[in-house]
Image (cartoon, rainbow, N blue to C red; front, side):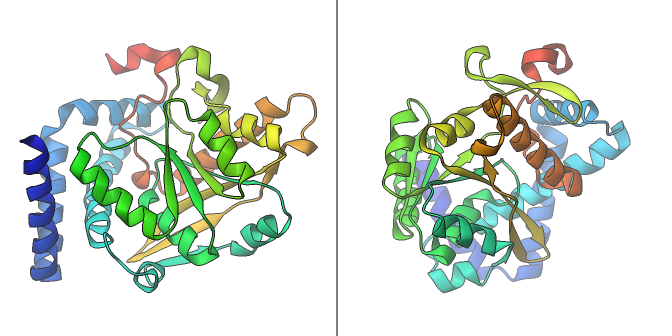
Length: 292
C-alpha cells in the first residue's frame, strides 16, 4: 500500500511541475522549505550542531540551514524533471570545470574513481558525467526502500549506463567495475563505524573517514579524482580537482590520500556551505555529545 502511495505521489508531483508556472512553482518550493525548517526539529538540530563544530556562529548557521532546505527542495525538483530526460536535456543543465583532467586520466589507461560527497545535486552529476565523457559509471550507494520508486530510478540510470553497487558488501562490485574499465563514483563524507574508518581532520576537528577509495586505488593503481557539483543560478557546475595518485604518497599513502579527500570536501563546502547535506552526524564518533 505504501509503495502505491509513494508512486502516486511521485506521478502527481511530476505532473504538477509541468503545469504550474515557474514563479508559482518557485513560491511553492520556498514555502515547503520554510515549513521543513520550522517543523523538522530533529534534522535542524543536527545541522546546527555540525555547523557550530565547523566554526559558524548560531546566526550564520541558521541562515545556512534555511538556505539548505531551499536547495534540497530545488534538487528534488531537478530529480523529478530529469526522470526520462535526454542526453541533450541533461547536458544543457550543466557546465564542466577542469574536464581536461578527467580526459587525461581516462587516456592514461588507469582505473578511475570519482570521489565526491553529499553536496549539491549529486544525482544529476553522475548522469551528466556519463553523458559528457561517454563512460560507464558504477556508483556505490543503497537502493531506495520503496521498490517501485527504486525501479524508476534504476531505469533512468540504466539509460546512461550507470549501475548501482549496493553499499553493503560493495568491495567485490567496486573491484570488478574498475577492472572492467568502469569509472566508480564514491560518496565518502559520512561518519563510519570505528572498524571501517580512519582518523582524519575536517574543519580542524577529528572525524572518522572511510579509506575505501584509497584502498581500492592502491589495489588497482587507480587515480582518485575529487569531483563536486554546485549551483550557479540555474546551471549545475561540475568541477574536477587534481587527481590523487597513491604512488606518489609514500608508505602512509592510505592515510594521506584519505586526508586529501577530506580536505577536498572541506574546501568545496567552505565556498558554499548551504549546498552540503548537513543532516548526517558527521562528528559522531569523537563528539557524540553535541547531538544530544
